[in-house]
Length: 443
Ligand code: AMO
Image (cartoon, rainbow, N blue to C red; front, side):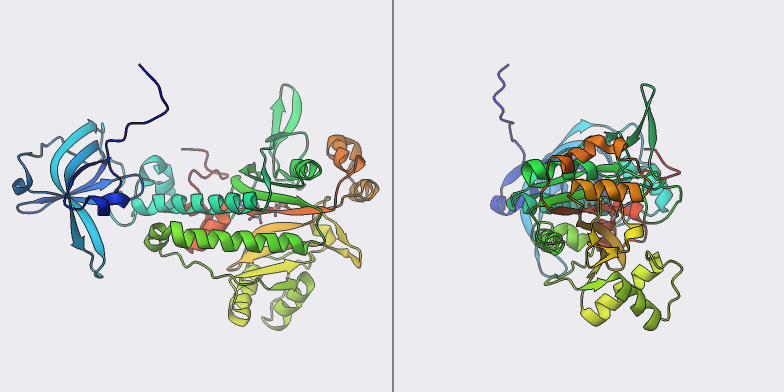
């Protein structure tokens, strides 16, 4: 045996069919659907990213299809590439079958129908059978699109000089405070699952200046809501030597523009299949938190229950306002009250009741929190004490401040929430491959 690092390629991808028109090629994939007609049959083959229409008819070759050819068999299908027309006049290739070589046989038929345009069952059943339902072209397109979002985030930030990091998920402290932290018994010691990479990404601005991470984080959400998960993918970045927290918002706007363009160009099939309404971003408008509250009360006659934060309905109203009056799918809300932001947030020197922080709303849903951080050691220790925290418990975090940190800031962007609102989905679980919530840890 000789291992050279090269993988023998004896099959062709659908994307290359144009080059092989009227030639005989082999594709590999799964028999997705068989539709028998009177004197021919459609055999739809599901390949890595497309479904390929293959046609079986006795006139095409001596090959005779056996009864073993069943849905969900892995197969190599050989045939002649022929061009046809789509309903809207586009070009579409199909394969006239010369041979089917079966590579595997399923032991049973799928528990839910995955061959229709849509998986027709309720969300809970869909999630119960995720390894199967994800095979449906529409379902899997969601996560291909999600790949595009992460790719865009990674590509753009790498081009901007950011270093990709991986921070530990077993931590000495919960970074975000609150009660939604998972406690863990770590050989008799109490530790926590990371709520975010916050403490580590900050430490690393003094090392690399600009860092980013795309990784799961954990929140012990005690309620079953349509927008909260117990494990989600956080796309974080942190940058040093900022002039102000506007630098963070500008970087995020750049990232989002890049992501949308990447989806438009390289994920066009998924965008079309899922009917994604990609937002066009030129600039993103900003509103101060208290101005937004006033707007909600005056314009929408809304009576807020909490003057320190927004409830989901307020976010939706602000989303409507941004779209209708400002022509934007996005809205930055800045200067959140200090009382509602975590200990690492820098207060606004002009008015310390408020912070140099922001949230980004996308179509009426918070998808990002970010802002400038405290970088001065004494200021951070004082802030911790004023919040009733014990700085000694954060000794390793405070090494950043003690031994010198540049002015810095960053953000966390929830991948599933962004995907959810791109899809126009009602529940964040629709945009989560294998969701973890208060009632679900399987599959
Ligand atoms: P925050 O806690 O606001 O900020 O989280 C940032 C973003 O993560 C997403 N998100 C969630 N998504 C799904 N399920 C959840 N339970 C959940 N909780 C949060 C949201 C949210 O906007 N360290 C800061 C970020 C920073 O300042 O850099 C943080 O984690 O989209």
